[in-house]
Length: 105
Image (cartoon, rainbow, N blue to C red):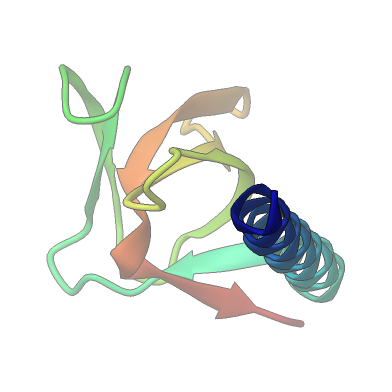
């Protein structure tokens, strides 16, 4: 009986720690989104925009172009963005997130 109680206690502590970690990550993500509304392309040669993460290239955004991040892949490697197209319309696609930095006016 003591063995079962010990295992349940360890399980409860593990679940509690997991919930705290998820909550902290969520709070940090929300705070980051509030602080950074726009991002700047930081890759010298420009940044490829893909239809889906790593698939067909739609366009290349030049260095310094400003975009809005609307989502992230589960591993954080890809950012879903909105950007201003040459024709004045809003474009959407995926970019490698490592080439974006927070831009504040």
